[in-house]
Image (cartoon, rainbow, N blue to C red; front, side, top):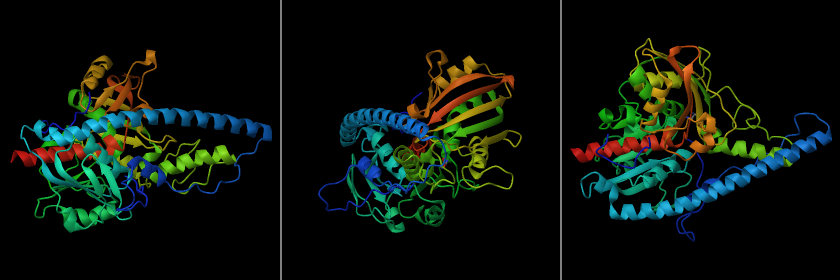
Length: 450
Ligand code: 2RA
């Protein structure tokens, strides 16, 4: 079921924008900036594997051809997306000029004065602005804050926006501030921004406050409403948020007893640098016959998978894996005897995370009934027709608000009290920017209802 645009009565990365400054010939296209900001390719390594030169040449030709096809497919998809965006953008601008977001609230003119994005030039920050535009967020003004990109002019359906250097005072002029910054930055500044003359609500995408009892950790479709008046709200880790969309309806109906998750996480989870390293590593392989030396990831990502994301903990799990456990417990309010465990793996896809999930339930669960339940759940798109080769895949989930869920089957391990399924979700959207923007929509509703 699709996530809907703003209807108030209901209910990470550091890419630079580049160096185009205010006063330059024209404001810049964000997509161009994001691409042009990727770091230059690292020097190629010598070939790592020995083989006959004929074999190597054949491999190179095949890899080159494959990459060429991928590039062509990507190009035509990108062209289609650009064309769709052009039409959608014109409609969005018209809707914002008409004030449709406000009308949807049932309060003509029901907008807030300002929303700010801190860390606006990063991968998540850029997606936040797109979500605000796409959903006709009811605000008179959007302000963007970033250090290195300050001075850059960004064209948006809210008008041309000049990126400003961050200051607490400027952020406090906004009613809502979306933080797309590091944990350290957020830890220092979010408490200083929240409250103030505008009763500013900070929605933080970092892990700085997620595990603090006094700070709500929110997936808006699950536990949003009751927390929408808080002035500091934490966004969950993307891996948790994507999985939660499918697990919550199942928990409500069948009561989860055990959750065992294995993840297939895209390079984009590590931000624009991670995506660049994957693309450049593949390009170096085609050009030079060897993948360039990893600088961002601990190991080569092209042609590989890395079973480590974030630091190892004393119990042998990584922090990324423990985030899934801690955050599902907090968001769902799970009792201690419900166990959640995860193995998190980085895979060489560009964007959108996937998860294989096994659940044991208190109540008996029928796959067909679960399929129907998920089909009608908010933020979920059922893609489950194996006979037609239809199942969730990260390429298809990329750019989508909804999490694709499929491969639903009775668990061989837990029998009629268990299910196994697979999902793919765009972690920059559902797992970060979109989640934050829906929280912000709920905060606006709360404000306008007072
Ligand atoms: C990753 N989930 O994929 C992390 C980002 N928050 O690296």
